Amino acid sequence: MKIAFWSEEDGCGTTSGMAAVASVCADAWNKRSILFQSSNQAGDLSRRLGAGGVKERNGVFEKDSWEELCWFAKQKKLTKAVLLAYLVPAAKGRIYYLPQGEYKKRDSYPNDAKNGINRIIRFAEQLSDLIFIDCGSGRDQLSEYLLSQADAVVVTISQERRNLDAYFQNRHAFQGKVIYLVSPYYQESIYNRKNINRLYRMDEEEIAVMPHNPVFRHMSEKGKIERFIRRQIRGTVFDSQHYFMNELLHTAELILRAAGEPVPKMRANGRQALHTDADTWIRPPPDD
Image 1 (cartoon, rainbow, N blue to C red):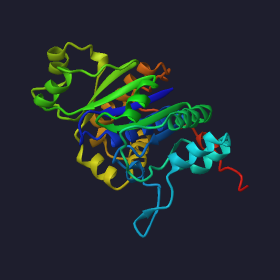
Image 2 (cartoon, helix red, strand yellow):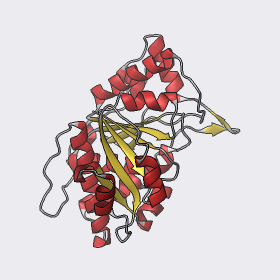
Image 3 (cartoon, rainbow, N blue to C red):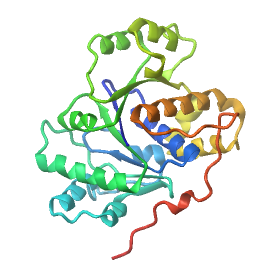
């Protein structure tokens, strides 16, 4: 299943939101996940997951993973082992991601690039249960293409009335099922989830929220999103995060259902332990 995250505006936490949802899917339900983030937007997934990424040498990026993998695809040399060699483990056996290359937003992209990306994603689908794609913010040719290929689209929007009006008065049309993720979400705001549903005539299952949480934001900035989520699910931290985690679990459920992916039932306390055999999913490719 392919799930694309996108926002019309900057600053809505699209990248951190995707990393959090992917972490819930992997750590709560053992959904094997691969995350992608192309160089057409300025976010940095590696800074949210803290497992390293594309290194720089004298201010120059050593490699652009997307471009190199697209070259392998064009030469018909792309294999699972090649893709695995480029993926970075955020949590071994559960979450891997493709590092972002040097930021460059083009006006147009050649067909070879689209064909290469399709092949990369097809191989990734064979290795995982879920594919998450961070399409960044704004509209460009590559983002439009990736969004059109997704089984579900998550549109991140802010809670300010002017931004809500600006978006929903000219709502962007998508081919697949859409979930609107309000981030950051303030429960005490007059424009709460109930009023947003009423004002913009949406069903309850179309709106998800990412509550404002200084602790989560701090962990995100430290590159510890997956570790934070995993500890919450295992129940090894204080219950002060109960509201945040319940909403995040609900958000992840809505997104998976929209994509057509079955969601295991949670325990009575809203949490489910990790599977002990999760680390058997992806192993390092052979050196040759």
